[in-house]
Length: 253
Image 1 (tube, helix red, strand yellow):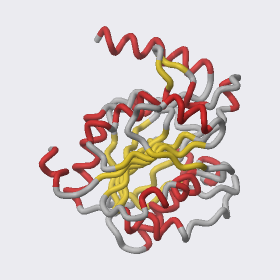
Image 2 (cartoon, one colour; image 1 turned 180 degrees about the vertical axis):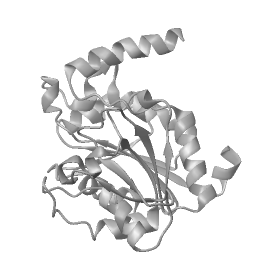
Image 3 (cartoon, helix red, strand yellow; image 1 turned 90 degrees about the vertical axis):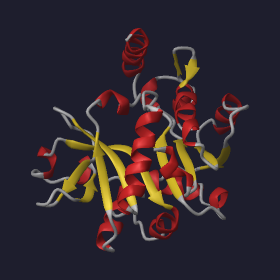
């Protein structure tokens, strides 16, 4: 698999700007500790086997604390002073990747269970298919609160609809967006400039870039994971407690 990756460069953007209001903590969300380490360090470590040319961590709330927590890691930093959505966060990383050409992987700093092997698989899938956008998805019995993957009658991905913007039929879809993407860099930053805030949350959605690719006739694909736990995000103290149980179960397994 890694031979496939050798001919094209990889960069990684880790989104780590959130306040994590529901964590009931003054810490930046990604600095909450899981098994003795900040959440974001689990994520940064997971991309190391990809041998990225650059890893850019986008910080916001408590940015200096995040930088200190990741000192010693091979990471660059960008700042999202206003949290205006995921597309806006990725735009903050553009200057750090100004002369980069290749594939850009984007993932969140609060998904500590993502496996390096899964990220390698996504990158290989992206390149084998010649996609402009590739992403991870999973099926949930209860998909409430998550963006839904929209597919056409042939099973091709045609877009992602956020929960707050979904209609009744779309809310019945159980395949959800895992929030882990690979983009062709030239397409990504051009498409981001066309993203608007015309939605229920008034945010710039990174998911709109998927729709832009489809509208332009560019190839988009998704890998549906069997293990939903890999995409388990930490949003509340209860999530963190559950994650502690999960991580020790994985070590024992």
